[in-house]
Image 1 (cartoon, rainbow over the protein chains, first blue to last red):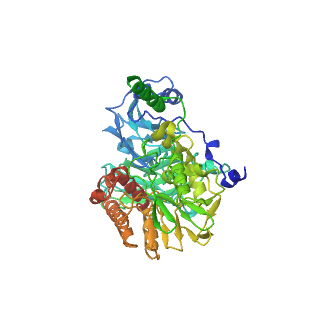
Image 2: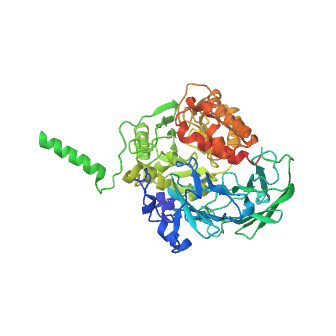
Image 3: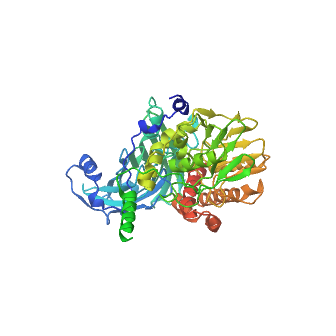
Length: 277
Length: 311
């Protein structure tokens, strides 16, 4: 026993049950036969009809992800937002993650275009489902299969973040300047560990700290807001459109699970160079 | 004859599909080379992990002193660990007193269970237990995905002696200096210097021919390489690959690769490129120089981008 003790076989298997390996899933399974989807669908949408989404919005993801802790995803509407026809919400779901609803993103006609780009963690090979809800209350779904695993447990602890940096933000613009009334694409970057509940297994007393809510306004009007989860990578990044005037303030308010609230503002003036490079 | 052949193929069929949990036995062909007196290295494969190679990927080995032996990385599976232990026993009958992990990656540490019955102290970087606690499950899942039943018995063993900064151990007439580095390849990189021969075991702080992997910080990796280059080293053991180059020239291809990624990623960010656009264009000129480039390069750029976009 002594050698055993000395060797400290405190194998983590005891607290982390080994899930059955999905050895034969090198090929893409049938999205209609997923056993993970029906209970999620029932919980989130009940018996509501979900239509095919390809003419409403598309989801862009690389099928074999490079880094399971940072998988870029883009959901793009296939039409511009107008008060007559717009996408109200986009649900982004990673079926096999411990908390499958990665985010619910709300848009308005003021968003210009309903588009969200972010980065996801994958705990296992999984379908990603993007479901758009249009202003007439209909639901549309697009689905992609992604081969990436281990990204929820592999946390963003590579460079441990000094406390005073948590919650600092940056706006990064796709173009050097904006033009009034023309939809502009901006990336909101948030310095935050976005700890996953799995990553905190090591210290059970610690409540994971992750971003819960993001609200972005321009000139006081909401352009994008989101309820998010730890399926979003550390240092959460959200890229989306807004429609600038000649001059106005872009503001982001971020709240996390430790009830911390962070605010970032930038004055956007037509023709004046903007950060992005 | 005919019936014998049928029997043989039936046995074979059972061996690969039967319900018996198969644990591969150590191969007789477990090759070792002595890079310096008392420093024995087994060079791993550059191929992807498979039931054929059983995760025999990283360079692993041991250092023999007058009183006992220190294992440096027990290998990528129980089978590889057993192979190393059997090969070690052909070299010396001295006890294994230490099992040292150079870092957290599965191809270096899953063989630890082969040394379970040795009265050995398991050693790692002070950040290693935390890193393993968070990654054990996905590492084991991935092993099971690649090896199936052959993954049985491979295990994560948590170190009990943790190195913060430096620790010197005596193997009897031979002292080895363990150094814990700031975040680089991972946040738990440890090097082992056999002071009597000037042999430095680098783990994955040095990749030769195999595409370097950044699972920590790319700028930190470059800073650590600059410090390593200043050390007096007569012999070296990389985490992957071998080379005829002298120290510190042997560090140069890896340093140049990482430096190119940093420069080109910074340039892409400056041109307002997205992370997807950057991974499509950065560092491709290096592709011919490295093995497994497609499997690891884009991931390195992803890591670099998420680090450098905050500068």
